[in-house]
Image (cartoon, rainbow, N blue to C red; front, side, top):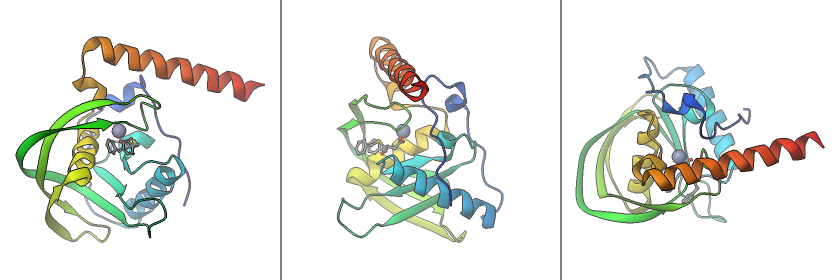
Length: 175
Ligand code: K2U
Ligand code: ZN
């Protein structure tokens, strides 16, 4: 397992549309293991493969609260079969847009189909934080960030903030 660097805005690779996985094999499982380790190291609760620079339709997630037993989840070629219920606002963040949070509205229930860690098909309903997170991650697979759903003013402010943060990190590392 290895911790991989997480791409941050405005890296153009984050705008790529990710490709389907042909077979859930040991290489894909090794990628998911690395993604999960990278997500935990960054204090995230979800991560899409494109965020570590791999344009494949793969997501990992762990919604367990701190102090609880980890509950890793793996999604290969996930699809939303149905989105229902009301639009619910949620204060979102993103490991690719560090330190910026803003409210996004999304359907509060989704029916999803995906392949699990061993390539078995799963169909299930997601609601609450699970629904928010899976929709946020599936946007990544289409090259869409949560800040793309905000006003142009807010999106540009978020990118300016991250660029300033990354410049400061580079200066600190050079010292
Ligand atoms: O895509 C990512 O960077 C993963 C997000 C997942 C997430 C986004 C929005 C709402 C919930 C989860 C990261 O885990 S960002 C950290 C975070 C954690 C809890 C709530 C909001 C943001
Ligand atoms: Zn994100």
